[in-house]
Amino acid sequence: QHLLYFHRSSKSYHLPFHKSLTENLKAALNDVSKVPGFYSTGKIGTYCYRSVNNGNGSSILSNHSYGVAIDINYDLNPFSKGVRAPQTGNTSDPVRWRSFDHPVVKAMARHGFGWGGRYGDYMHFSFFNGG
Image (cartoon, rainbow, N blue to C red; front, side, top):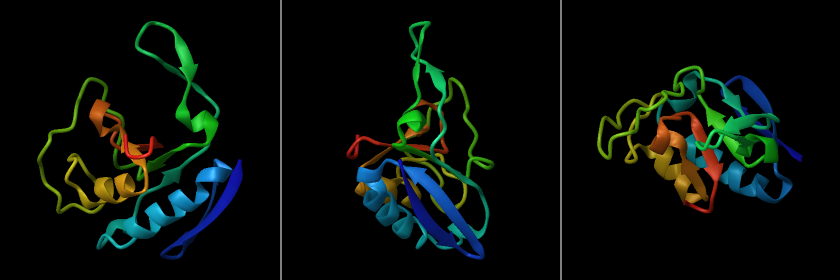
C-alpha cells in the first residue's frame, strides 16, 4: 500500500492505493479533474479489505482489497445489480455517468482503469491496463 495525496476544491484526500499504480491513479484523477463541474461534489473511496461474490456462489477478494480499485462519487453513482450501462447516453452530467462515452470513463481508461459500469457498478474503476 502507498498513500496518494490528492486535493480537489477545498478537500484533501489521502487515498491508499497499490504503490506501483499511484502514478496511474494520480494522472487519471488529474485528467478527471478537468471535466467541468466534476469535482464539485461526491466522495472517493479506494482500499477496503472485503470479499465479493464471484458469480459462482463463492467469494473472492475485491479489487479494493489489493489496492487497485477506486470508487468515484460513490454517493451519487450507486451499484445497480443487474443493470448494465448503455453504449450511448447522456455525457453532459459531470457527476453521474451511465455511458462508456462519458469523459470521466474515457479519462480513467486512458490510464489503464476499466469501468464497473459494464456490470452496473457505476462508481467503480479497477486497474486492468484499459480492460
